[in-house]
Length: 391
Figure 1 (cartoon, rainbow, N blue to C red):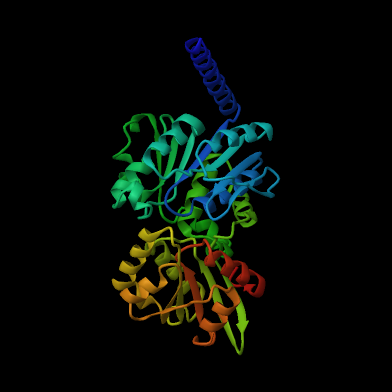
Figure 2: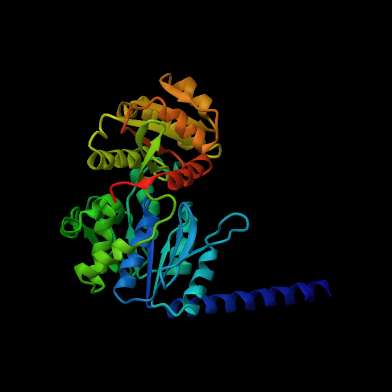
């Protein structure tokens, strides 16, 4: 009797799997264009930019981001938060396909959420099956799961390109990815050169301050291949709505000083943060001489803390007048780096006021490290008290 019950349960389970597979395939087949955005940094920004541009070009688009904030960008451009119960899983992408079909879209843009190699395969090849893949960059992060070197990380990210897909990759990273593609002859690789969007940015200088050039290049390349003209691309870019992790600068009066507050908390690695510093120097007249750093650390990301300590020891601290550290591991960092200040407060206003007291007028306070915890509270406070600068 027990064996009969077990066999019946197994048969029912197998029928359920067949039903799920057919439902998943049916949902995917009803969406003409699925774009997967992968890479180490900038995925959310590229997904939101591209969604806005394609929507401006007449497409009905649903986008999903999982960066600083898990959100849907709905076909009308409005934002819907994604409630999370427990740990995020790539299996939720099945529901995204179902939602896209229900919304009647002809384009779905999804940020790849996988970290571990096996999950990349399941998410891209088995669930999303994108016909277009956009790779933003390859940088050192999640090294315990993806590898220590750019080559190792590139091998994992290359998994996101399934057979038959059209993949847009920054020109300088083409070899990092294509050498790991076992199905390269079945893929169309589009190497996007630096400066691809320079003509657009020269006509609309505000784009240079709103977004990083490499992100604009990728979005312009994809949109052009979708038949969208330059002016429509620009209008879409300017209408894009970003999440809390987006790089942004505010002007704020603190006491008798006017300072600039710069959000780079979501640039979680040293290389990305150095690119933000370059951008600030291009935006702010005295930025090269007046940047004060505020490093926010997370207790569950000890690997990132070690990465920051190594970077600051190896010359990154020279970019700052002073570095302040807040969050878990702050005291441990202080023992390794003698020229940093540990902040014990976790109140955003108190942190800002105390640091500003030691800054010059018109100096820049750059927040970096992690958007979670104190970083998020600081950005929310800066948004309330500051006035957007340079945009």
